[in-house]
Image 1 (cartoon, one colour):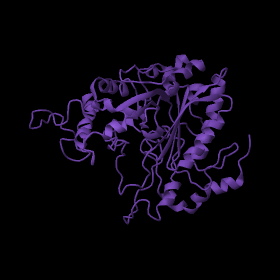
Image 2: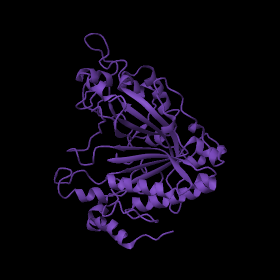
Image 3: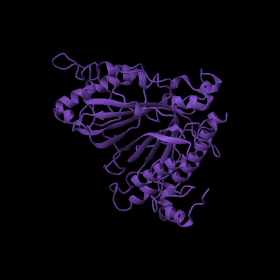
Image 4: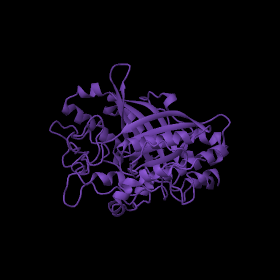
Length: 424
């Protein structure tokens, strides 16, 4: 194994040294143990985010690799993301998979701490701090067959049902292994992507890769819910870590009704990943009123059409002067609301994407939908079934790829991700 270059190591840490005091005081373990929290978006004096004096802390913010849960689940939305799936190479099995996860875990731990990778580092992220880098690993349904671990494959990882509106491309779906990379700096994220790809050696090959983005931290005057490429406030109904049932909804319980063979997933979560193309030209032809009727919320503030602010509960039984529901029966926000789905909820943590122009001449753009839940059969599946039957938004979107992955818990100190599965 090639030793890391001392000059690169010093250069990679330079920013951390210059803002050490601010970085040390701005970090605290999250309540769920999944990640270190991002430092404040504005200073106590009320300085605008992104103004002089605040940029250094953006690069210095670090997310913990070790913990009860993997990073990248409850971590705040990141400005740049890469989603990539791998298939194990022909002849590779459990031994090769374990060695790969060891390499990946060591690389993720180093890069998330602002260090260089252990093998020949590319130097892409020189002079940058960790920039809230997260690297998250998951296993697809086929992984268990390839590694001889079918008896340890949870039932929650059974393939998702088909939905009538899907236009799924199998070449950009599924995969033995899945990696999510996020950071607040594009070069830091790309550096991690290259390192992960180089670490595969001959053990795995890329099945598909997708690149996404979100608004940069500090781009708004105060923290707010993100917007998608339709201009809609997106994520209002997400469960909050402060809610008493948050862990129950998002993370697999430590003990449960499943067999002991599935105990390796305790503290883990299930990620549903969908590439959803938005038909933006068609959407932009709708009037503001029509767009708001489709969503069931105002575009400017994200407030429900029944009034209030973004956080005001929807008055789903409120009728207008015409005797019809103020929030239409087929409005996206009504159909997807937890109270309309027996309390089913998932933590949505998406990225937007733009891949140029599609063959039809329209923007090839939309949402890299990523949602997290303790059980997809109680989270994503029932909600998507209802949306599939009558969501007004369906006329403006296309589900083009799909994947479901078991994301194991965060590694303990000295462990690699997935060790409890592969060596248990």
